[in-house]
View (cartoon, rainbow, N blue to C red):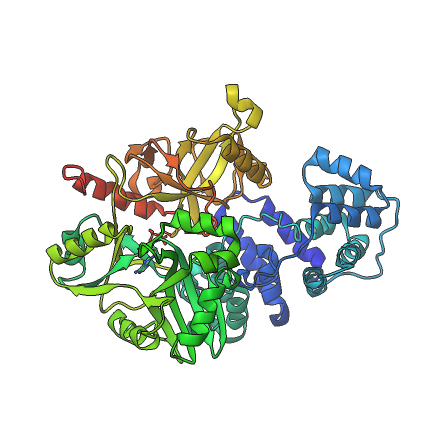
Length: 588
Ligand code: ATP
């Protein structure tokens, strides 16, 4: 496919305000691709060069892109910058300058999608001295031979500003439509994607071996699996009942989730949102290579700092703070991180489909008893609510957050929140027993004393996984420090959109819409019904809202979660129902 054609698809997608039309346009696009370009175009539509866990970054700053535009159009750097300031978008700046440029377009070559992809990859891979100039030249060369519309996207793509608004699940639905003529294979494609976390790879297998081929995608080393997630229930009785009278309970550690992949001495770690975090955990990497008794394994655990003097785990906030203050290596010495292993996914072959009891047994075999860095999470099997309650109380007494109960016969379900794991957390008086993670959908300008920060609060939402849509749940207007206001304004102004994105459903109009990207953790007093918000309204007629919401944490934006990892509307409805049940008998 020529890049020109892809650019006109981009233009079409950009103008759409409905998710269904987006799926149709994308399916149309995928149908026109050849086998050897399909993965590349999938990455290009997502604004990346490879699956996100590969961590391939363009490494191209706005100033460098401006210089490339200047070379390609013959317009001075100052003039490029002036127009950029006026239009607020460097892609449109390039488009405009290309169309009025006196330098003749070098039309001898037309770029295919593959050529553009390869050049962009070269831009990303070029590093070291002289790399800046080379990156600029590669980009300038493409711009010089391209049409104004192509220029718009040649600039936005490496700057991470494509913002087509297509989430992973929308892309998967488009795959399904393209391959089968219907959107109904979406679920199967989704399970495969949850196992390999690489949309380009799923697209390639689909193209070659069809939906059945995708169904055969297996767990493999150094390709992170989307993590299994826990449901929540407020009381020991309810948990035990749901589990059928007998289950495992583990202590719940509040740290960083780590998915450890090990082959021989090679170890890589991935975070909850599938970023490679190997370099953050040198001590755990070394220990996994040394002490894990399996040649090739994938297991999960929670990493957190342990104070050896007091024999206590440090709370999450403190773990991050220390890491920031002391640097990774100093921290490894002064306050070593421990990995509390809680699940095993792979040991020479996949164990995802095997029951928890069997996975746990294998995990106990491969985690060396003599290791004081990588340990097993504390676990007991219980058959009574009293015993569960006691274990919970003891865990809280040990300074932990609570417990996770585990169904002994449950499989490891990648990327899904299910009742195979049920969490129960300590609650605080007069507050919802759990925090919610909300995606920022828009923001307001400040009035009065806030005017100087140009920031007056956030419009936040939840995720409807089934429809792949974001719904509003709360406006958050208080509790921001000056530092937070500055940070939020700066970050959000970079992802501002002209109109409401296609995947957002809202009755409220903030001063600015933003690309759904950042997640904040919010504590509230309760969940109430509200006709103002669209959270759950699609299911329940009237929406849900938060009473007295406030952002918690060291910094406002949560780094380990993306938009689609925010709390779902289904969870909010569940929490609302649970709140009714426990409101007469508050939890300790
Ligand atoms: P979620 O991960 O469910 O979206 P969250 O990130 O806010 O929510 P929590 O609600 O605190 O996290 O609970 C789930 C997380 O608890 C897991 O993702 C995992 O990182 C952590 N965890 C700690 N101890 C355990 C354990 N023993 N078993 C499973 N998970 C555990």
